[in-house]
Image (tube, rainbow, N blue to C red; front, side, top):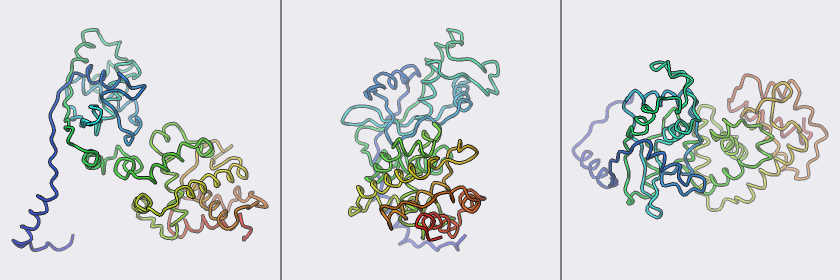
Length: 357
């Protein structure tokens, strides 16, 4: 810990002035709704995106497993305190945007619709294996009448305030992975390109992502890593991977001269090349049945793109080296991601394709 700074009266006055200057008045009301009403607001109009209580695009797909969902339902049944749900009144549509509480709302909806089988319960063990309609009718009614408290920001809370609250609630949370946080707090034109490319069918097939990985934004993470390593791998810091990716995303979002069309083309050309010359794509494991690792994707995709930059009409004599012990050691190995190993992996692929090894 650095030595304690001696605080003067002038510094205190300056700090107080800064607080007053940067304080944002946030008007809000505290509401309390029965679970039945909350879920009705969420479900009515869900299919055509007209539901009153809605999840914004920067929030994630459902990520709680059944045991965690069950534990939340158990807490409700036991009458334990439930964290407030944060929502914001979106002025243009008078809809309620969920800022924090997505997992709780989705879990309640799953349970009420008999799509959740309770499991792993420790306190209410006799409920393991139950769905909602297995409960006695009186208990079903009491459950639906249970109220959930909600902090509702008024229509004066603009998008900047809503995203700021999202960041402060979720930064550092173990429930959000790094890519999910970026989607919430680092929106911009380049992130929109990442979102679009991450849905490319060829890309998803070549990587063989699982549904869980897709829901947790792994494809977006892979696309971001492709561009970050392609354009800046020599400055990679193994001890600050997330900072490396965050900084690249921030810079690309703010760079008005960035040729986004060219970047998309480069990504798609890389995919075409991999599909043609590496029929198993980025997959690995016995019979190539396993989804790819980040290490293999980075080394192969970036190496291919770098080679294509040097020779657009590249037709490699062989790609058998991808099955060699040497490449497997580099791309699989012990997963080491020191700066030198990252550089060595990427440049090995580029040099092999260009016939320089």
